[in-house]
Amino acid sequence: MKLRTIRYYMKQGIINMKRNISLSCASVVSITSALFVLGAVLAIVFNLNHIVRGIESRMEVTLFLESGTPYEKVSSMEETINNWHGVTKVNFISRHDALAAWKEELGDQGRLLEGYTRENNPLPDYFIISVDKPEYVDAIAENAQILESVEKVSYSKPVVEFLERVAAFLRLAGMTLVIMLLFISTVIMSNTIRVTVFSRKKEIGIMKYIGATDWFIRWPFIVEGLMLGLAGAFLSSVLVLGIYYAVYYYSHGMLLSGINIDFLNLLGFSDVAYPLLMVFLPLGAGIGVVASVLSLRKHLRV
Amino acid sequence: MIQFRNVSKIYENGLRALQNVNFTIAGGEFVFVVGASGAGKSTVVRLLLKETGHTDGVIMVNNKNLSGIEEKNIPFYRRQFGVVFQDFRLLNDRTAYENVAFAMEIIEASNKEIRRKVPAVLAMVGLSERAHAYPADMSGGEQQRVALARALVNNPTILIADEPTGNLDPFTSQEIIKVMNIINRRGTTVIVATHDKDIVNTMQKRVISLNRGKVIRDLDRSGYINEA
Image (cartoon, one colour):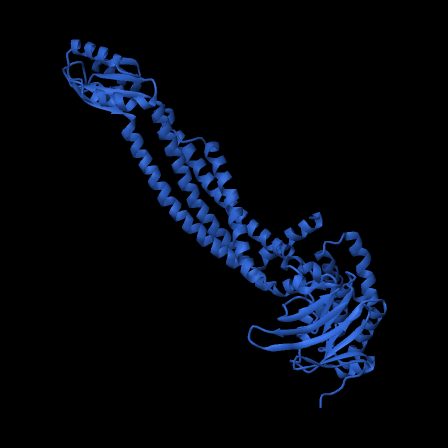
């Protein structure tokens, strides 16, 4: 393909787009909105996955003891737990240590806990069991549950399962919506291109008589679709990433500043931006090409 | 060069456009295909351009059987023809020069070639002065000359004209036909489908007469003979 021919395709594609500018805008808006929803869903799902991974990587089971469990019992429990498969470390934290640690963590606001002393400490004693590998967590939690004097076992699995259910629901609902929107955009876009094909019917006829190949005739329309699709991808990227950027910095500045738990922070901007662009650009371009091919297949007969 | 052997064409709506048509056109000939409207002239043109397929018989062009040409090769097949229509079919947003250059762009000719050939062919049809005029600012005769220039710029071996003078006054029609005659003398086969008696009578070339899809006469150095 000659350079001049490619330039010709590009130029004609742009002329096509300008010829029915209002329809071109409608196609861009519809693709933008479809990709915007997709982007929002993806950003949320990415973050949920990030949280799930973070929780799963903290391979710990916490065992809260009934109040008043005697210390002899505690040390025998510690010994039992230590023998379980997969346990790397058992930490006993007494309710007094827990209260002191909490007070310290709150710093200036420690006064909030001033009313609590050794006598009326509301916190329970607990064990933190460190586990070798995530797959041992379930068994250890089950074992812990049937130990005597155990009030409550807390571990990551139920939270993880809940978050995964939320993510799965979002994926399903979001994707259904996105597929519908993408379908609508494809239809709108293919109609837009159909209108250009009609407006250039005479030209196409002449081209055919002169001996233009079908691809020579098609390319300008494919370029038109491609540019509309990429314009939609670009606009939706700017929207989604702009909003994400704002949320990311706002949340960093305000919400979670006090809590230094890594996995509860939002994924970094570039962790979201790159995958989104990797999805948006090919998707926008793809819809454009599919839409133009669809409208050309029927209407290129002369 | 062109051979129709027992060619029939029945359109999808049942219309029998051609029935058992036979003729042979040698390279370098100038042939009129005449007949009243509906006689089948345009069908002959459409079959030659492979715009539609024939129902029966054999059509050979430059030793190629048209039935054997694949869909994707039709554009390349068409490049051996120059085509002129009654309604000129020019692009209104392009000048005479650009309309002619367009035909070369389509077959991906080089810029250098375009710059060399377009002025030459415009000169040949007598339009050098009007190269940068738009179709809307040109007379019918001028527009048809642009169409002729466009048809010729890629050096076709066959020039096909379907009612080329249908929209022109008698004087202009004669001018156009004269240009075609010049083109013919340079070696291009010319086929003109027409029902314009005057031009057929002045040229005294071979005339193939069609009536209701059949060849009723095929005479050399003839004029237009009215059907009784």
